[in-house]
Length: 467
Image 1: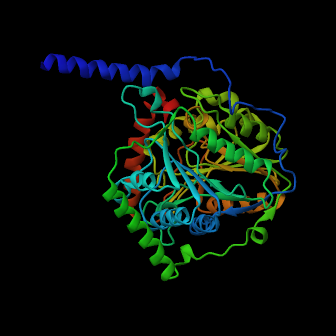
Image 2: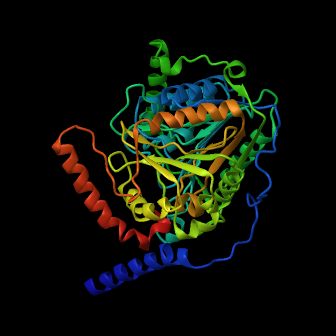
């Protein structure tokens, strides 16, 4: 019996290795269906002059905007997120959603099927949503033990859409880690953009349609019918009480009063782009778009990304790095990275990246960078969910907004430069590490961490396409 069990375990391990690893290195041809259109000549040719945007660089303000959007919604709220994490801000936002549903607003919540983070007090959220007649929840690619090739197909979009008039998208998930006024230890500096159109335009239509396609896709699954009524009601009451108590106490997070028409600025043109919804290695449409944008630069390309791992399969989509145009990249340092495995991948490619002539700044803190943005010259901007790595290029769903506006580009540039002021310019040998005078202990910890990650970086080449 033991021999049979060991054989089955070994067989499953080999099955996982082949289907979750080896298959991703095979050239599997793709047939383009939805979300596969790409025109290299089109940079931002949609809705000329009828959209307004607002840069949301402050996490607390970004959370306030979301609460107000939910509070003001009259017909429909659609949310697509990688994860919902712990904290009061998540409770208040979910409470606001339930209250909106109570007044007749239709609420659709789409989450990643593996990385949704619904644990602890929020583990019964699917039951709570499923019990409400005006709410629905679905999960994109939930865990399937017999289909390991689906494990890498993650939903990485962060979208909030209300009534087809207002949208927020960017790098933030939901939770105190992104929104708290008093940041927790794992707080990250992120960035979103609000898009407002009083009439309803083509870009908002595309964002709505993208959500609908994901919602109805074969990869997306409904909540199971087996659930606990008692636990659902308990969590619902808890979230409603928390939100109503915040209103009673006039918590600033739930009491914002933005005027989208006045606070947002008009832009020349704006476009919405996504990766195709596919399994295995997707066509890297977002990477292609960013490469095309960068090739239009006449003076400079400024990039901010938490993870920078330009792998060999990305080479054709990063040809702008060999141009004479000055490219500046701001990313996390050894001290601030929240993802050691990704940083090990970055270490293994950093020297090659520096040979392109790019100036690399490593952010020293406090906290860490999670924003994904790009500025071309002084007028073209990108904000979205795309990291400069293979996962964002070939595996995840990703979405970006490309904005043609000199004032917005200036604001975005200034926001990125604020982080550059707390960053070190990497030396030509790629090995320089500046340590502030905060004691021998901190320096020793960083050196140990560097030695460990340098060792790990030598073996990440085996799975760099998947990190």
